[in-house]
Length: 224
Image 1: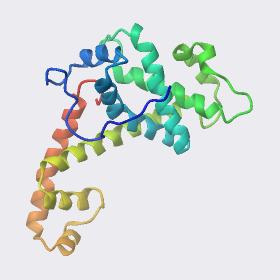
Image 2: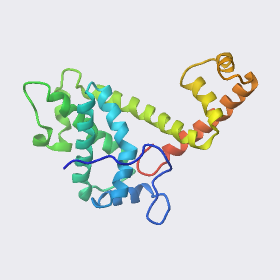
Image 3: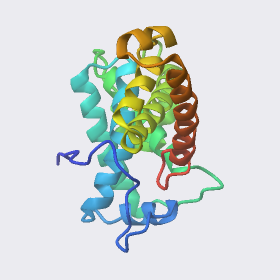
Image 4: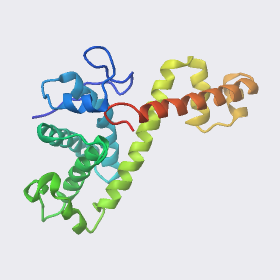
């Protein structure tokens, strides 16, 4: 079975059937329904890029990273019928990270002559095998890659949402400063705007970006 990510990577939080954003618990409950296409598109929207980035940062190729995305989604889907969401014990994001971590390590170990299939050693419960990995597939490396991918994904998504809410000329100024690393005077020369406007836009949009990050960290289902 191959899953297709048809959901956009931008836009507002996934809406529930009655038009409201789902709570974390309702998001998880709906994932138990394999036929609920909209909620699984939401899963890919929230986690597809993140898992892919973590896989690449762990040393996988683009094709291997895509396999990890698919395998992670399938592993989550298989476990969902028995999954019990207990926020006080483990966040849903933490569980998905655990699943993706095993799939990344599994891909890295396939490069070695002695292939170890994690599913044959307890699947999602086979974390003990990670301790024996001696090279770039070390569990700590994967965890570091995931944390960095999570941070970058959060900022990238926040920037995408900010772009939808501000004027194009203001976003261009902010993008040149924040992403391209230009100084205020360089932006003035490039765009022909006043330095006062450049600094005012930077200050205002920096505050708005922080607000977008905060909203994403509260997004139901895992972006925070």
